[in-house]
Length: 507
Image (tube, rainbow, N blue to C red; front, top):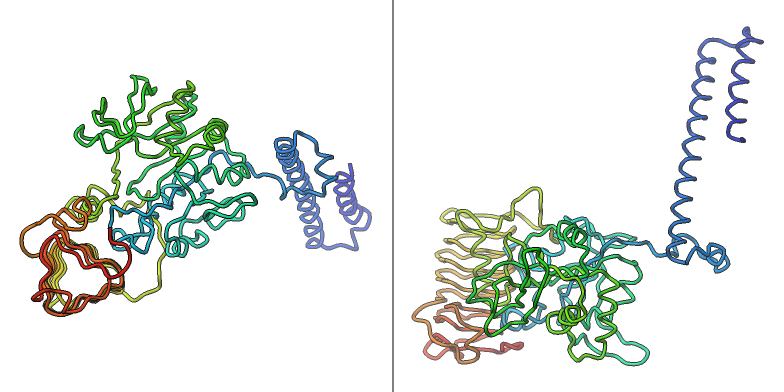
């Protein structure tokens, strides 16, 4: 009523001046009063609508989070900002693994923070998938060597995850009142952060790994989960049957309902492999985590998934047929990078509709000098190329000397390559220095003396902050970490399969 009265008074004033005192008013003033009256009426009606709308939202939020006891909330002195802001689905990104199968590359850095594609770090891919899928709340669980990973993620600005409500949160292990413990398994890490999940009261929780290269719309997977009224949905993809024993294997019927789950079976009955990506209905996951809280090294594949299956939960397999690469070995890591520079890349970094975001430093542009040559390669910003680069991935701020030839190799940022160097099929980590007249990747392949299962694939692997002196030759399936000198190389040669480990853990 008060709003109506205000409008009527404005109109009354207008007609009073117009009709009773026409000699006091010119036409411009009359127009001004009319417009003012209309504008005021519209503003009042609009504001009243907003108040009613947000008042109803406030009532709904308080009803959902406090059992409808609005008076109890007011007595506690709580406002709307103190209440839970509900999220339909949040993501929990497991990024605490060492990635020991990458050898010296992960001696001082967590696997998700390892460089990829000359510009990115591995964790950029699941983070970008989240924001591209409309998921704006991501908990990143870190543990092993977290410094570079934490610095890279920051407050989530590159991925538009710097938000007051939701956004990205770094979740390391923390000391509790009763005890203190590291994350002892993938599921244990989630269990230790149940309070974080509960703070958003989600309907669904998306579990991700921070060490895979792929593009996936998680919203489509969530729609599949809802359509099947599923309790658990596992993302799967077909793999060659001879490789199936490396994965958790799912056996599903024609409706994609899971009949059996086998964790890395010796004799797999299916080639449908788990991708380590799960959507759980939160009450189901919460119940499983509480039931398994005393399970040693509690893991999703070994414990949570079998527990849900044994308790007759509705479990479905979401089949993904896009590009997905587990870069957990030096061979797969090298191969995934090389695929980026194929004539027709299987994995496209240049799609406008599904961008991969990363932290970008303000550095100078790429420079290719006279006599320099680059063919089918990725070159990072700030590079200076005076030599020849072919079918390789070169990170930012790499200096390549005159007469150098680099083929089929990965060279990470801030590395310096000397003059007249030959590099074939090598992986060189960040901030390394390779002297003049060095040869990497010569001779025949030999089994590695330190760890044949890690240092293979015919690669030369050099850990970060390493130095290679002038004039030495290094064979295949070798590993080097640390500052090395001429006397470390017998007759100036490191034969195939040998190692020089002076810093970090190269096992």
